[in-house]
Length: 154
Length: 145
Image 1 (cartoon, one colour):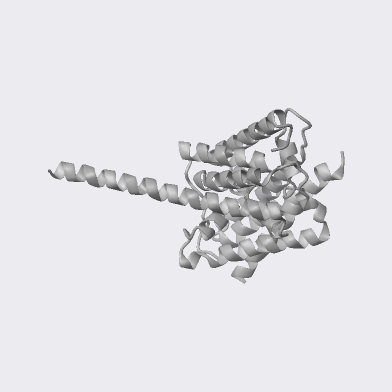
Image 2: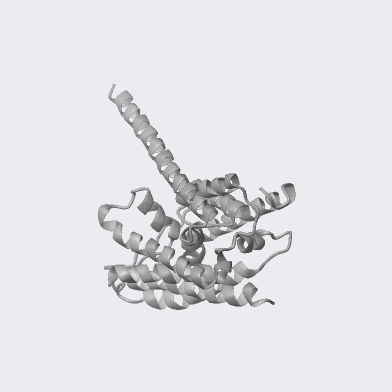
């Protein structure tokens, strides 16, 4: 039941993406084209999604716990850092360039469309690249800290 | 206005909101696709944390395929983008969403719903650079890149 409901949520999410037109890069790019022939579609997608989510989210989190989990996992951070803004900036540039964000990219790849598949493979590469960059910088920080500790010891 | 400009987006959006609300109600989880998929594909999700991600992503793929059978026009790629541009876009989206901890679903739909400051800043930022990218592609390259 637990896994089936995850699967069902994925199906409903993808149906929403496809019906709304988020899987059409021309629609996404049309929305982002504020100085050209602006297409307001995406505004309606966001409005529909947020309206339904707001109506259900707030009564939900007043409950004691989710149906299949011990507690609600809601992010609590509120700090704005360079990683957040820089990451969002890079993501937006890619989104405007190709017209796909992760969900619609995956839903489009399922149709075996060559460019949809290409996008998803490149997206996986980008995600892996970030993981390696993060590990490398963590390794550098750890070595630096170790060096400082050794100097203090000496 | 043409229904494809408001009715389908509104109806599809409502389904997206429903799926996000389901994830919170049933599992207490944020429906952020880049996080769910990203931690699965890079192996960052632990062994006991993979099955549900796989089920959700499987649902995304099946749902896409179902609607492709109903209305393939909703997947039409009518913009002129070379493979090079698609690869660059994928790299930026993959790297950027992991770095910024979210995409249109996690920061846009879920973050704005719970009025998160971080998500509001992220959403404004990716909409801004997205608009900039479209502006540059359309003005400097005539919409073909």
